Amino acid sequence: MTENEISYKVIGICLELHKTLGPGLLESVYEQALAYDLREAGFLVGTQVPLPVIYKGIRMEAGFRADIIVENKVLIELKSVEVLAPVHFAQTLTYVKLSGLKLGLLINFNTVKLKEGIHRMVNHI
Image (cartoon, rainbow, N blue to C red; front, top):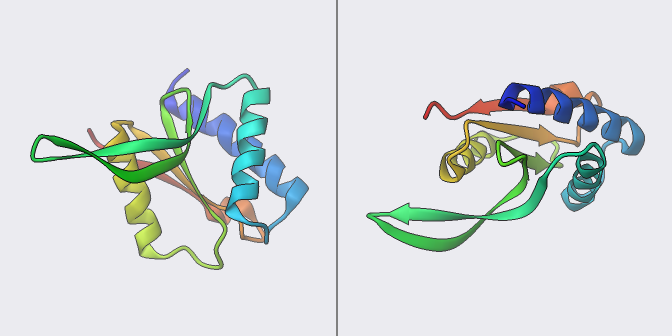
């Protein structure tokens, strides 16, 4: 399955999750529920995946963690905030680059219409 096929299915699962739970919950609730739904759909899912930083050839375990990685191909960064700030986009793109993946999804569940809170971040490797 390609990154685009995975992201299409992930977004569908997110839309259903948002329809069920609605906005206003903590990010951790959405993370646990989404991981559950993705696994139920048959996906390989990693949560709170450590992302090391390589600086001048030295591997540093700096404490960065991806919220969810699906099929070792798509990184998902979850938020539950009133408004996404530019730093949220930069953070997600940095995580995608650190992971070596091609595609990330930044998803803000604290929106009335979830489609307004979904953003694709592409790592042009």
